[in-house]
Length: 88
Image (cartoon, rainbow, N blue to C red; front, side):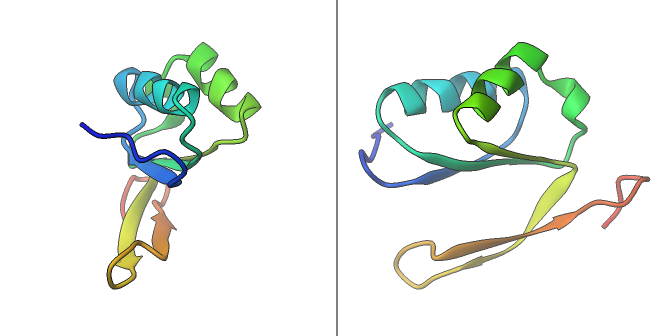
């Protein structure tokens, strides 16, 4: 995979392997705007979560992507919080 230096990124998935990937991208110079996952926050290692939060990454657990806006590039990602039963 190619890392686009300087281009911000959003990661879909919040399990440990995704969080490790986010930290590697940050170390390579990529700004991670958010991590979005439909699962509860409890699926991820709290240490990894703390490291990402300390770097200003927004962690949106129990959310789903509703729409991606933009023609050639992604201009915005619209997300929606799931209800208590995990439904949208």
